[in-house]
Length: 288
Ligand SMILES: C[S@@+](CC[C@H](N)C(=O)[O-])C[C@H]1O[C@@H](n2cnc3c(N)ncnc32)[C@H](O)[C@@H]1O
Image 1 (cartoon, rainbow, N blue to C red):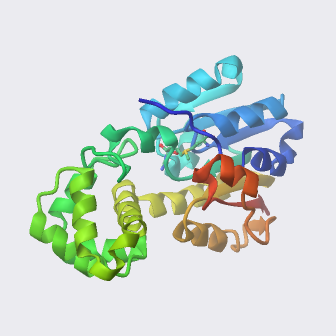
Image 2 (spheres, helix red, strand yellow; image 1 turned 180 degrees about the vertical axis):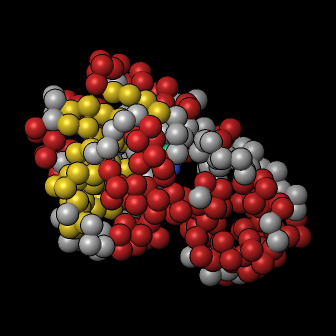
């Protein structure tokens, strides 16, 4: 069921956080397969990781991967959005670094039961973890106007209205393939051979809505403002322009000093080895 999750820009993230040389706490908001944390633990022997993931399965995988370092890692099955409050409850007021590698892991994408991939048939789910609403509810119960707006805004998909209309005619849709077929049917015939991009955008939009991804990202960046000590660093990897825009804008606020004027991109070699890295952008800032 599981394939390996290859961490994106792992070496670069660890290098940018060289303030960790002296030790301290690093919050990993998105433990996932544990790859970024592993790199940090190996490189900075005095660092302790406080790790979050809203996905219980991801946490188990990360625990296994970081087994050797278990005395230096604590695991929290929580949404990263309010990590400032969770740290307060643990009596931690300031940390040295925060990393977030937002989006899905390969474990999530490749497991057809989770319903994230349009290339595998599965239930319309797409929940990363602790939230209640599934893709089924968004696709089948939302008013069509609202669904079209989500597809337009979160997917930047120009045929949003046509797609919502076909979905409306075919509801209830139960599987990822039923949704995929509805999207393809809504694309003008002469553009249909390029359907993959449209389908990808609609799936992205629904996933963002299901998991409240942009809202969580905003809140996580605000949590970082509160909990990073002055001179502490934050590294965020995002996978589409809506997320990157949020990070870029936040890093312009007075609490942050952007260290990367332009986002750091994966090398050609990394993109070749790991296609998931293709759209990744890393931005790093220091707490003023
Ligand atoms: C791309 S993976 C992280 C991979 C990890 N950095 C590694 O190197 O293996 C993203 C992870 O973030 C988790 N995630 C996404 N949004 C989250 C949120 N709001 N709160 C907590 N975890 C979240 C997902 O469940 C997923 O496991």
